[in-house]
Image 1 (cartoon, helix red, strand yellow):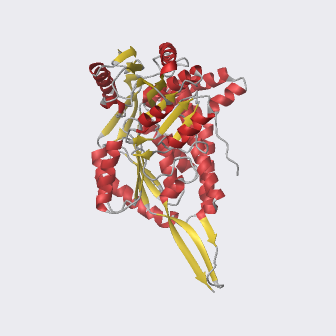
Image 2 (cartoon, rainbow, N blue to C red):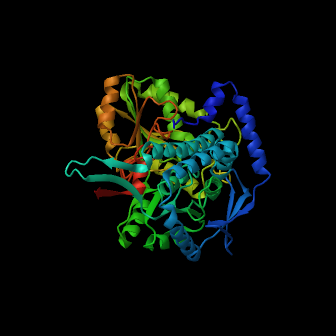
Image 3 (cartoon, rainbow, N blue to C red):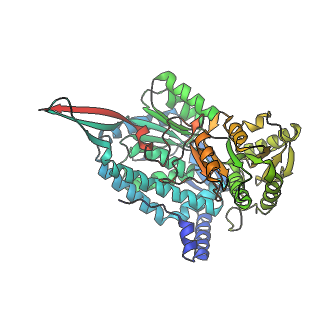
Length: 521
């Protein structure tokens, strides 16, 4: 089996069919618009359950429209899901890895057939523009195919060992599942991140209970339905929506949950991990955000740097754990870089994310807008200069301007805090060495980027930077856009947990434990 990334929009461009891409997306938007507002159940085994209390999710770019009605699960539904997943695990743990490969490949094919509808759903849910929404669907398809490829390449992670001690000895290393995993996924990649954690669980012989963000539960629902249609047995993956305090908290306290997979903020992740490990020693897979630096040296191609920083910082409104947020620019090119960056940012079209010309849609919720306002004010009070942005365009539609801040003292806490809104801080540096030192002086270590045409500078950066995903001269996003099978995605320090990155060759190992088997004749 060969693995190839999906790259939908790029393929349409390369084939001269860009307008066809837009027509297909517009068609999906129109079809979704006519069918919004439906009610979606919990999925526990074969059962589709409706509860008394509901969660109303509105369209990201029009809060007057209901996207869907979802169930508010309680501890009763959680316990049923745990029991169902445990029962399914009794057989699923012994399933043939070849069957799991086939299920993953069928799911990838189903997703590819419906990619425009799935991308439109993401745009309606969290406000991504059509290009980023489609890229997320592609990423999810890539996860399905890449993990299937890994299972096949590693023969289900069963390996014969060399026997050197006794002639009649034959040994094997066999990677085995743990049991039922509890998967808690975020709003910013409601399909792709939900998929990578869920697939890490179930494709390795575990079962899973998936709890998506209450802001974006529909993409996760679509994922579970596709996996079921592809042949995943009932109960192997289960779907719960509701308040975290009513589902997540009791799940962590249950010894019947074998593992925890979470993507979100550092503070929340640390609390969940503490609560989980206080009950018992169990495996955890976590990705916990970033405060990602970009260094622009005086040997950079400035136009490349401007485009890379613009896309890395302001794509999806900075609501990515990989978003560029701290920009360190050598003195000789500082003014030129900043002037060009401000002009490029002024070109960004902000508004309805379903329109093909839109770059930046709404922030995810009103809390995000409040944080944006707070951070802008804190930057001003701290001595920062707002070179561009700093304004809320439309409170109701949650539209804000991407913001560039200069001259904020390096001692200010904004330099160390993940913001998750479209605000970047820019400062001068005297050398690459100074830039790397400042870049490393945070508790995070997720992504980082450099712009330089000097190979020795790039090698120095790669060797000295403390981050799990690093790029040189990446115009499509200085610190963003990792692709499964190409850039394994995960962080160092407080940005990660296992050291085995999603979409990389070692990720599935985080969901398994090794058993050494030896036979004598």
